[in-house]
Length: 346
Image 1 (cartoon, rainbow, N blue to C red):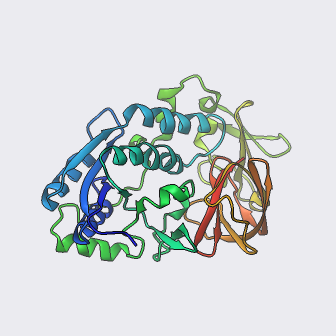
Image 2: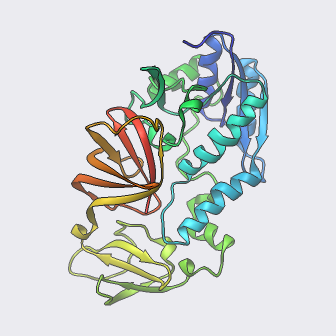
Image 3: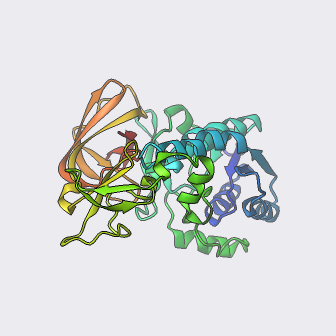
């Protein structure tokens, strides 16, 4: 049980979710402070929106400037992965390195006992351990991007929205007259302006082979067309290939070194196995459960599989073939609604 009057730092993005999270904790009797991360050189509206909410709630608001480390750990990582022909998930990286890394430490420096966020997921305490679980609203569940958390950090994290729906959260914001009650959800990657990946990547590395024109071929090397940079294509993509063919063709993989995009038929996209690196297990001392389920990207359903550790990597074998397993994305393992851990698909 969490004792009342403990101090909680709430990560406030200026959106409705984190704003309601702060309000809920305040209503429960916690000493609440708001913290907004500054991640770009330009001042964002997120900071001012979060400050307005804090003023309405009557709590202190702090700004944590993580511009340099965010660029190094998230933006540079994102660019490097794309230029290797991989498709990274920057939210997973940001949660590991920034939000539950630097911000977690910053909250401690403020004297906070806990860090709270507006993520849709739950932290429970069962069998003597803190456990990360899916949100009750599975349509909004964000447990996938939190698999790098540890038992120690879970013991100091509060996720107030884990048992609420988006409609309930917006209704609560309306009741509290919060100015962000109707603010739309962010859909794009926060640091890529206008969701223009090519422009963002070209600013960082104009000479990369991933941005140079090349050939579109089939698996046998037959030239079918041309492209304007492998970084513009993702596995499973069908539209925008510019190829006339008797049957639909999809991107199977990219060969950055040879500046090639390899395409093929839909059935060639399916595989029943993957290897993931940098595997993190939340409870290292626990054995894998008899039934394990895995998710290969955010927004898809979980599928039953078997898992075999291979050093710091894991080999995941699915009972049914999966479509478009993508290097750079995360595979996350579940025991029912509990997150076991995850890794980066190779």
